[in-house]
Image 1 (tube, rainbow, N blue to C red):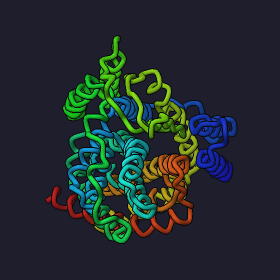
Image 2 (image 1 turned 180 degrees about the vertical axis):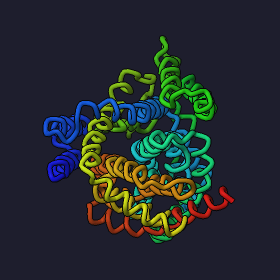
Image 3 (image 1 turned 180 degrees about the horizontal axis):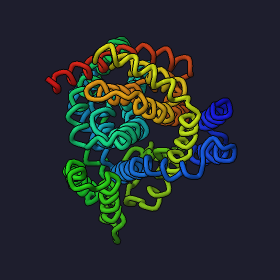
Length: 467
Protein backbone atom coordinates (compact mmCIF):
# COMPACT_ATOMS: atom_id res chain seq x y z
CA UNK A 1 0.00 0.00 0.00
CA UNK A 2 2.78 2.46 0.92
CA UNK A 3 4.67 1.66 -2.27
CA UNK A 4 1.54 2.36 -4.36
CA UNK A 5 0.98 5.65 -2.55
CA UNK A 6 4.63 6.66 -2.96
CA UNK A 7 4.58 5.93 -6.71
CA UNK A 8 1.36 7.89 -7.09
CA UNK A 9 2.74 10.88 -5.14
CA UNK A 10 6.03 10.96 -7.07
CA UNK A 11 4.27 10.66 -10.44
CA UNK A 12 1.79 13.40 -9.56
CA UNK A 13 4.51 15.78 -8.36
CA UNK A 14 6.50 15.28 -11.58
CA UNK A 15 3.39 15.71 -13.76
CA UNK A 16 2.54 19.02 -12.04
CA UNK A 17 6.16 20.19 -11.91
CA UNK A 18 6.82 19.19 -15.54
CA UNK A 19 10.65 19.00 -15.51
CA UNK A 20 12.24 20.43 -18.63
CA UNK A 21 12.46 17.85 -21.39
CA UNK A 22 9.89 15.53 -19.80
CA UNK A 23 6.32 15.83 -21.05
CA UNK A 24 3.36 14.83 -18.89
CA UNK A 25 2.99 11.66 -20.94
CA UNK A 26 6.52 10.35 -20.41
CA UNK A 27 6.35 11.29 -16.72
CA UNK A 28 3.11 9.37 -16.19
CA UNK A 29 4.40 6.45 -18.25
CA UNK A 30 7.50 6.36 -16.06
CA UNK A 31 5.26 6.05 -13.00
CA UNK A 32 3.42 3.18 -14.68
CA UNK A 33 6.69 1.37 -15.44
CA UNK A 34 7.72 1.80 -11.80
CA UNK A 35 4.35 0.39 -10.69
CA UNK A 36 4.90 -2.64 -12.95
CA UNK A 37 8.45 -3.21 -11.72
CA UNK A 38 7.37 -3.09 -8.07
CA UNK A 39 4.39 -5.40 -8.62
CA UNK A 40 1.81 -2.74 -7.71
CA UNK A 41 0.20 -3.50 -11.07
CA UNK A 42 0.70 -6.51 -13.33
CA UNK A 43 0.99 -6.89 -17.08
CA UNK A 44 -2.54 -8.29 -17.13
CA UNK A 45 -3.78 -4.88 -15.89
CA UNK A 46 -2.42 -3.08 -18.95
CA UNK A 47 -5.08 -4.26 -21.47
CA UNK A 48 -7.79 -3.62 -18.86
CA UNK A 49 -6.64 -0.04 -18.40
CA UNK A 50 -6.14 0.49 -22.15
CA UNK A 51 -9.73 -0.63 -22.77
CA UNK A 52 -10.90 2.01 -20.28
CA UNK A 53 -8.98 4.99 -21.68
CA UNK A 54 -8.32 4.57 -25.41
CA UNK A 55 -11.66 5.86 -26.69
CA UNK A 56 -11.73 8.85 -24.37
CA UNK A 57 -8.13 9.78 -25.11
CA UNK A 58 -8.32 9.65 -28.89
CA UNK A 59 -11.69 11.41 -28.92
CA UNK A 60 -10.14 14.24 -26.93
CA UNK A 61 -7.12 14.47 -29.24
CA UNK A 62 -9.41 14.60 -32.30
CA UNK A 63 -11.52 17.39 -30.77
CA UNK A 64 -8.42 19.44 -29.96
CA UNK A 65 -7.14 18.96 -33.53
CA UNK A 66 -10.46 20.29 -34.86
CA UNK A 67 -10.20 23.32 -32.58
CA UNK A 68 -6.58 23.99 -33.62
CA UNK A 69 -7.45 23.83 -37.34
CA UNK A 70 -10.38 26.20 -36.84
CA UNK A 71 -8.21 28.52 -34.77
CA UNK A 72 -5.65 28.68 -37.58
CA UNK A 73 -8.47 29.46 -40.02
CA UNK A 74 -9.54 32.40 -37.83
CA UNK A 75 -12.79 30.87 -36.57
CA UNK A 76 -12.46 31.84 -32.91
CA UNK A 77 -11.15 35.35 -33.49
CA UNK A 78 -14.03 35.92 -35.93
CA UNK A 79 -16.47 34.84 -33.21
CA UNK A 80 -14.79 37.00 -30.55
CA UNK A 81 -14.91 40.09 -32.78
CA UNK A 82 -18.59 39.52 -33.48
CA UNK A 83 -19.26 39.18 -29.75
CA UNK A 84 -17.35 42.39 -29.08
CA UNK A 85 -19.55 44.25 -31.55
CA UNK A 86 -22.69 42.81 -29.98
CA UNK A 87 -21.58 44.48 -26.76
CA UNK A 88 -22.36 47.88 -28.38
CA UNK A 89 -19.78 49.68 -26.30
CA UNK A 90 -21.14 48.45 -22.95
CA UNK A 91 -18.26 47.05 -20.88
CA UNK A 92 -20.33 44.80 -18.65
CA UNK A 93 -22.29 43.43 -21.60
CA UNK A 94 -18.98 42.70 -23.34
CA UNK A 95 -17.76 40.87 -20.23
CA UNK A 96 -20.93 38.76 -20.09
CA UNK A 97 -20.76 37.95 -23.81
CA UNK A 98 -17.10 36.91 -23.59
CA UNK A 99 -17.99 34.59 -20.70
CA UNK A 100 -20.86 33.07 -22.69
CA UNK A 101 -18.61 32.69 -25.74
CA UNK A 102 -16.06 30.88 -23.57
CA UNK A 103 -18.78 28.58 -22.27
CA UNK A 104 -19.91 27.78 -25.79
CA UNK A 105 -16.36 27.03 -26.96
CA UNK A 106 -15.77 24.85 -23.89
CA UNK A 107 -18.96 22.89 -24.51
CA UNK A 108 -18.16 22.13 -28.15
CA UNK A 109 -14.35 22.18 -28.28
CA UNK A 110 -13.48 21.07 -24.73
CA UNK A 111 -12.16 23.15 -21.84
CA UNK A 112 -8.55 23.20 -23.02
CA UNK A 113 -9.58 24.87 -26.26
CA UNK A 114 -11.62 27.50 -24.45
CA UNK A 115 -8.82 28.44 -22.05
CA UNK A 116 -5.77 28.19 -24.29
CA UNK A 117 -7.21 29.47 -27.57
CA UNK A 118 -9.73 32.09 -26.47
CA UNK A 119 -7.55 33.77 -23.83
CA UNK A 120 -4.84 35.08 -26.23
CA UNK A 121 -7.55 36.33 -28.60
CA UNK A 122 -9.26 38.20 -25.76
CA UNK A 123 -5.91 39.67 -24.64
CA UNK A 124 -5.33 40.88 -28.18
CA UNK A 125 -8.77 42.51 -28.15
CA UNK A 126 -8.15 44.16 -24.78
CA UNK A 127 -4.91 45.68 -26.06
CA UNK A 128 -6.78 47.15 -29.04
CA UNK A 129 -9.44 48.56 -26.69
CA UNK A 130 -6.75 50.00 -24.37
CA UNK A 131 -8.32 48.50 -21.26
CA UNK A 132 -6.47 49.14 -17.97
CA UNK A 133 -4.58 46.34 -16.19
CA UNK A 134 -7.38 45.64 -13.67
CA UNK A 135 -9.94 45.24 -16.46
CA UNK A 136 -7.61 42.99 -18.46
CA UNK A 137 -7.11 40.78 -15.40
CA UNK A 138 -10.89 40.51 -14.93
CA UNK A 139 -11.46 39.37 -18.53
CA UNK A 140 -8.51 36.97 -18.46
CA UNK A 141 -9.59 35.36 -15.19
CA UNK A 142 -13.12 35.03 -16.56
CA UNK A 143 -11.79 33.19 -19.64
CA UNK A 144 -9.84 30.76 -17.47
CA UNK A 145 -12.69 30.15 -15.04
CA UNK A 146 -15.48 29.64 -17.57
CA UNK A 147 -13.37 27.17 -19.56
CA UNK A 148 -13.94 24.51 -16.88
CA UNK A 149 -17.30 25.76 -15.59
CA UNK A 150 -18.66 25.61 -19.13
CA UNK A 151 -17.34 22.11 -19.84
CA UNK A 152 -20.23 20.18 -18.26
CA UNK A 153 -22.97 19.93 -20.93
CA UNK A 154 -21.64 17.34 -23.39
CA UNK A 155 -19.52 14.22 -23.15
CA UNK A 156 -16.95 15.83 -25.46
CA UNK A 157 -16.68 19.02 -23.41
CA UNK A 158 -13.96 17.69 -21.10
CA UNK A 159 -11.64 14.69 -20.99
CA UNK A 160 -13.06 14.04 -17.51
CA UNK A 161 -16.54 13.71 -19.04
CA UNK A 162 -15.37 11.30 -21.74
CA UNK A 163 -13.48 9.09 -19.28
CA UNK A 164 -16.46 8.94 -16.90
CA UNK A 165 -19.00 8.29 -19.66
CA UNK A 166 -16.84 5.49 -21.06
CA UNK A 167 -16.24 3.95 -17.63
CA UNK A 168 -19.94 3.84 -16.75
CA UNK A 169 -21.17 3.22 -20.31
CA UNK A 170 -23.22 6.44 -20.53
CA UNK A 171 -24.46 7.32 -24.01
CA UNK A 172 -24.09 10.78 -25.52
CA UNK A 173 -27.85 11.42 -25.49
CA UNK A 174 -28.41 10.38 -21.87
CA UNK A 175 -25.43 12.40 -20.72
CA UNK A 176 -26.72 15.47 -22.56
CA UNK A 177 -30.23 14.96 -21.17
CA UNK A 178 -28.88 15.14 -17.63
CA UNK A 179 -26.03 17.60 -17.96
CA UNK A 180 -27.18 20.22 -20.49
CA UNK A 181 -29.68 21.79 -18.04
CA UNK A 182 -27.20 21.42 -15.17
CA UNK A 183 -24.45 22.92 -17.33
CA UNK A 184 -26.62 25.94 -18.14
CA UNK A 185 -27.14 26.53 -14.42
CA UNK A 186 -23.37 26.24 -13.88
CA UNK A 187 -22.66 28.82 -16.60
CA UNK A 188 -25.29 31.27 -15.30
CA UNK A 189 -24.02 30.87 -11.73
CA UNK A 190 -20.46 31.41 -12.95
CA UNK A 191 -21.45 34.52 -14.88
CA UNK A 192 -23.22 35.95 -11.82
CA UNK A 193 -20.21 35.30 -9.58
CA UNK A 194 -17.75 36.71 -12.11
CA UNK A 195 -19.79 39.87 -12.59
CA UNK A 196 -20.14 40.29 -8.84
CA UNK A 197 -16.47 39.67 -8.10
CA UNK A 198 -15.05 41.86 -10.89
CA UNK A 199 -17.82 44.50 -11.02
CA UNK A 200 -15.47 47.35 -10.05
CA UNK A 201 -12.79 46.38 -12.56
CA UNK A 202 -14.94 46.19 -15.69
CA UNK A 203 -15.01 49.46 -17.70
CA UNK A 204 -18.46 50.88 -18.28
CA UNK A 205 -17.80 51.66 -21.93
CA UNK A 206 -15.37 50.87 -24.73
CA UNK A 207 -14.65 52.19 -28.23
CA UNK A 208 -16.10 49.96 -30.94
CA UNK A 209 -14.05 51.73 -33.62
CA UNK A 210 -10.87 50.20 -32.17
CA UNK A 211 -11.99 46.71 -33.18
CA UNK A 212 -11.13 45.07 -36.47
CA UNK A 213 -13.88 43.81 -38.77
CA UNK A 214 -14.79 40.18 -38.01
CA UNK A 215 -14.22 39.09 -41.61
CA UNK A 216 -10.62 40.28 -41.39
CA UNK A 217 -9.95 37.48 -38.92
CA UNK A 218 -10.72 34.73 -41.44
CA UNK A 219 -7.46 33.41 -42.84
CA UNK A 220 -8.84 30.47 -44.82
CA UNK A 221 -12.36 30.95 -46.14
CA UNK A 222 -12.96 27.39 -47.31
CA UNK A 223 -11.73 25.80 -44.05
CA UNK A 224 -13.78 28.35 -42.11
CA UNK A 225 -16.95 27.36 -43.98
CA UNK A 226 -16.13 23.66 -43.84
CA UNK A 227 -15.80 23.97 -40.08
CA UNK A 228 -19.50 24.78 -39.73
CA UNK A 229 -20.42 21.71 -41.78
CA UNK A 230 -18.08 19.45 -39.81
CA UNK A 231 -19.46 20.70 -36.48
CA UNK A 232 -23.04 20.05 -37.59
CA UNK A 233 -22.18 16.55 -38.81
CA UNK A 234 -20.27 15.83 -35.61
CA UNK A 235 -23.26 16.76 -33.45
CA UNK A 236 -25.49 14.35 -35.37
CA UNK A 237 -22.77 11.71 -35.30
CA UNK A 238 -22.39 11.96 -31.53
CA UNK A 239 -26.07 11.16 -31.02
CA UNK A 240 -26.01 8.30 -33.55
CA UNK A 241 -22.79 6.77 -32.21
CA UNK A 242 -24.38 4.92 -29.30
CA UNK A 243 -27.27 3.15 -31.12
CA UNK A 244 -24.91 2.27 -33.98
CA UNK A 245 -22.21 1.09 -31.53
CA UNK A 246 -19.61 3.43 -33.00
CA UNK A 247 -16.86 4.71 -30.67
CA UNK A 248 -16.97 8.43 -29.99
CA UNK A 249 -13.33 8.67 -31.00
CA UNK A 250 -14.20 7.36 -34.48
CA UNK A 251 -16.82 10.09 -34.98
CA UNK A 252 -14.49 12.85 -33.78
CA UNK A 253 -11.59 11.34 -35.72
CA UNK A 254 -13.49 11.37 -39.02
CA UNK A 255 -14.41 15.01 -38.39
CA UNK A 256 -10.79 15.92 -37.67
CA UNK A 257 -9.49 14.12 -40.78
CA UNK A 258 -12.14 15.72 -43.00
CA UNK A 259 -11.29 19.21 -41.76
CA UNK A 260 -7.56 18.62 -42.13
CA UNK A 261 -8.02 17.43 -45.72
CA UNK A 262 -9.84 20.66 -46.54
CA UNK A 263 -7.16 22.73 -44.80
CA UNK A 264 -4.31 20.87 -46.51
CA UNK A 265 -5.64 21.22 -50.07
CA UNK A 266 -3.24 22.54 -52.75
CA UNK A 267 -3.22 25.29 -53.67
CA UNK A 268 -4.57 26.72 -50.43
CA UNK A 269 -7.68 28.82 -50.98
CA UNK A 270 -6.58 31.83 -48.94
CA UNK A 271 -7.28 35.53 -49.38
CA UNK A 272 -3.92 37.26 -49.41
CA UNK A 273 -5.59 40.60 -48.79
CA UNK A 274 -6.71 39.64 -45.31
CA UNK A 275 -4.96 41.73 -42.68
CA UNK A 276 -4.63 40.85 -39.03
CA UNK A 277 -3.15 42.79 -36.13
CA UNK A 278 -1.65 39.73 -34.50
CA UNK A 279 -1.95 35.98 -34.74
CA UNK A 280 -1.68 33.89 -31.61
CA UNK A 281 -1.58 30.13 -31.85
CA UNK A 282 -1.60 28.17 -28.61
CA UNK A 283 -0.91 24.46 -28.63
CA UNK A 284 -3.41 22.67 -26.44
CA UNK A 285 -1.56 20.19 -24.27
CA UNK A 286 1.80 21.95 -24.81
CA UNK A 287 3.36 25.07 -23.40
CA UNK A 288 4.21 26.81 -26.68
CA UNK A 289 2.99 30.24 -27.68
CA UNK A 290 3.75 31.71 -31.09
CA UNK A 291 3.08 35.41 -31.55
CA UNK A 292 3.61 36.80 -35.04
CA UNK A 293 4.12 40.54 -35.34
CA UNK A 294 5.27 42.84 -38.08
CA UNK A 295 7.08 46.14 -37.90
CA UNK A 296 4.05 48.20 -38.94
CA UNK A 297 2.30 48.34 -35.61
CA UNK A 298 1.43 44.70 -35.28
CA UNK A 299 -0.26 44.10 -38.65
CA UNK A 300 0.84 41.56 -41.13
CA UNK A 301 -0.20 39.96 -44.37
CA UNK A 302 -2.03 36.72 -43.61
CA UNK A 303 -1.28 35.18 -46.98
CA UNK A 304 -0.58 31.73 -45.66
CA UNK A 305 -3.32 29.20 -44.98
CA UNK A 306 -3.74 26.62 -42.28
CA UNK A 307 -0.59 24.68 -41.45
CA UNK A 308 -1.82 21.12 -40.95
CA UNK A 309 1.72 20.00 -40.19
CA UNK A 310 1.91 22.49 -37.31
CA UNK A 311 -1.52 21.46 -36.06
CA UNK A 312 -0.50 17.81 -35.96
CA UNK A 313 2.78 18.71 -34.26
CA UNK A 314 0.97 20.76 -31.61
CA UNK A 315 -1.84 18.28 -30.99
CA UNK A 316 -1.80 16.87 -27.43
CA UNK A 317 -0.32 13.47 -28.25
CA UNK A 318 1.24 13.37 -24.77
CA UNK A 319 -2.30 12.90 -23.44
CA UNK A 320 -2.31 9.37 -24.89
CA UNK A 321 0.73 8.39 -22.84
CA UNK A 322 -0.52 10.36 -19.84
CA UNK A 323 -3.89 8.57 -19.82
CA UNK A 324 -2.51 5.05 -19.94
CA UNK A 325 0.37 5.85 -17.57
CA UNK A 326 -1.61 7.72 -14.91
CA UNK A 327 -4.48 5.26 -15.00
CA UNK A 328 -2.08 2.37 -14.42
CA UNK A 329 -0.64 4.22 -11.43
CA UNK A 330 -4.16 4.85 -10.08
CA UNK A 331 -5.08 1.23 -10.80
CA UNK A 332 -2.25 0.31 -8.47
CA UNK A 333 -4.07 2.20 -5.69
CA UNK A 334 -7.15 0.16 -6.50
CA UNK A 335 -5.20 -3.11 -6.40
CA UNK A 336 -3.88 -2.23 -2.93
CA UNK A 337 -7.40 -1.49 -1.65
CA UNK A 338 -6.94 2.24 -1.24
CA UNK A 339 -9.85 3.25 -3.48
CA UNK A 340 -12.03 0.80 -1.52
CA UNK A 341 -11.80 3.16 1.46
CA UNK A 342 -13.31 5.94 -0.61
CA UNK A 343 -16.00 3.50 -1.80
CA UNK A 344 -17.07 3.00 1.81
CA UNK A 345 -17.35 6.77 2.28
CA UNK A 346 -19.44 7.12 -0.88
CA UNK A 347 -21.68 4.20 0.11
CA UNK A 348 -22.36 5.83 3.47
CA UNK A 349 -23.22 9.15 1.84
CA UNK A 350 -25.61 7.43 -0.59
CA UNK A 351 -27.82 6.33 2.33
CA UNK A 352 -28.66 10.00 3.06
CA UNK A 353 -30.65 10.73 -0.09
CA UNK A 354 -30.04 12.32 -3.49
CA UNK A 355 -29.31 15.87 -2.33
CA UNK A 356 -26.75 14.79 0.28
CA UNK A 357 -25.23 12.31 -2.18
CA UNK A 358 -24.77 14.97 -4.84
CA UNK A 359 -23.27 17.47 -2.40
CA UNK A 360 -21.15 14.95 -0.50
CA UNK A 361 -19.61 13.15 -3.48
CA UNK A 362 -19.26 16.35 -5.54
CA UNK A 363 -17.50 18.30 -2.81
CA UNK A 364 -15.15 15.42 -1.93
CA UNK A 365 -14.15 14.98 -5.57
CA UNK A 366 -13.75 18.75 -6.01
CA UNK A 367 -11.41 18.99 -3.03
CA UNK A 368 -9.37 16.02 -4.25
CA UNK A 369 -9.19 17.50 -7.76
CA UNK A 370 -7.97 20.84 -6.40
CA UNK A 371 -5.25 19.14 -4.37
CA UNK A 372 -4.00 16.46 -6.75
CA UNK A 373 -5.22 17.36 -10.26
CA UNK A 374 -8.55 16.39 -11.78
CA UNK A 375 -7.42 13.57 -14.09
CA UNK A 376 -6.06 11.19 -11.44
CA UNK A 377 -8.96 12.28 -9.22
CA UNK A 378 -11.64 11.28 -11.70
CA UNK A 379 -9.95 7.90 -12.20
CA UNK A 380 -9.88 7.30 -8.45
CA UNK A 381 -13.47 8.53 -8.06
CA UNK A 382 -14.75 6.30 -10.87
CA UNK A 383 -13.20 3.23 -9.25
CA UNK A 384 -14.63 4.31 -5.88
CA UNK A 385 -18.15 4.82 -7.26
CA UNK A 386 -18.00 1.44 -9.00
CA UNK A 387 -16.96 -0.18 -5.72
CA UNK A 388 -19.62 1.56 -3.63
CA UNK A 389 -22.22 -1.00 -4.69
CA UNK A 390 -25.02 1.53 -5.24
CA UNK A 391 -27.67 1.23 -7.95
CA UNK A 392 -30.42 3.27 -9.52
CA UNK A 393 -30.77 6.96 -8.73
CA UNK A 394 -28.11 6.96 -6.01
CA UNK A 395 -25.55 5.50 -8.41
CA UNK A 396 -26.42 7.94 -11.18
CA UNK A 397 -26.21 10.86 -8.78
CA UNK A 398 -22.73 9.75 -7.70
CA UNK A 399 -21.53 9.45 -11.28
CA UNK A 400 -22.63 12.92 -12.36
CA UNK A 401 -21.55 14.50 -9.06
CA UNK A 402 -18.10 13.07 -9.76
CA UNK A 403 -18.06 14.80 -13.15
CA UNK A 404 -19.12 18.14 -11.63
CA UNK A 405 -16.56 17.90 -8.85
CA UNK A 406 -13.75 17.00 -11.25
CA UNK A 407 -14.74 19.74 -13.73
CA UNK A 408 -15.27 22.60 -11.25
CA UNK A 409 -12.96 21.65 -8.37
CA UNK A 410 -9.73 22.29 -10.32
CA UNK A 411 -10.48 26.02 -10.42
CA UNK A 412 -9.77 26.33 -6.68
CA UNK A 413 -6.00 25.89 -7.09
CA UNK A 414 -3.53 26.32 -9.97
CA UNK A 415 -2.56 22.64 -9.85
CA UNK A 416 -6.14 21.45 -10.23
CA UNK A 417 -5.79 20.89 -13.96
CA UNK A 418 -2.97 20.79 -16.49
CA UNK A 419 -4.86 23.28 -18.66
CA UNK A 420 -4.71 25.85 -15.83
CA UNK A 421 -0.94 25.43 -15.46
CA UNK A 422 -0.48 25.92 -19.21
CA UNK A 423 -2.90 28.86 -19.16
CA UNK A 424 -0.84 30.58 -16.45
CA UNK A 425 2.27 29.99 -18.53
CA UNK A 426 0.62 31.57 -21.57
CA UNK A 427 -0.37 34.61 -19.50
CA UNK A 428 3.18 34.99 -18.16
CA UNK A 429 4.50 34.98 -21.73
CA UNK A 430 2.05 37.79 -22.49
CA UNK A 431 3.24 39.82 -19.51
CA UNK A 432 0.28 39.00 -17.24
CA UNK A 433 1.57 37.36 -14.06
CA UNK A 434 -0.94 35.77 -11.71
CA UNK A 435 0.66 34.38 -8.56
CA UNK A 436 -0.53 31.11 -7.07
CA UNK A 437 -1.73 32.95 -3.97
CA UNK A 438 -3.69 35.45 -6.03
CA UNK A 439 -5.19 32.64 -8.09
CA UNK A 440 -6.20 30.68 -4.99
CA UNK A 441 -7.86 33.69 -3.34
CA UNK A 442 -9.89 34.30 -6.47
CA UNK A 443 -10.51 30.66 -7.34
CA UNK A 444 -11.92 29.58 -3.99
CA UNK A 445 -14.31 32.56 -3.80
CA UNK A 446 -15.62 31.95 -7.31
CA UNK A 447 -15.68 28.15 -7.30
CA UNK A 448 -17.40 27.15 -4.05
CA UNK A 449 -20.74 28.95 -4.65
CA UNK A 450 -20.87 27.74 -8.26
CA UNK A 451 -20.04 24.19 -7.18
CA UNK A 452 -22.79 24.10 -4.54
CA UNK A 453 -25.42 25.60 -6.87
CA UNK A 454 -24.51 23.18 -9.65
CA UNK A 455 -24.64 20.12 -7.40
CA UNK A 456 -28.04 21.20 -6.04
CA UNK A 457 -29.23 21.68 -9.63
CA UNK A 458 -28.04 18.15 -10.44
CA UNK A 459 -29.95 16.67 -7.50
CA UNK A 460 -33.13 18.57 -8.38
CA UNK A 461 -32.96 17.68 -12.06
CA UNK A 462 -32.32 13.98 -11.44
CA UNK A 463 -35.28 13.88 -9.04
CA UNK A 464 -37.46 15.45 -11.73
CA UNK A 465 -36.25 13.00 -14.38
CA UNK A 466 -36.93 10.02 -12.10
CA UNK A 467 -40.39 11.19 -11.04
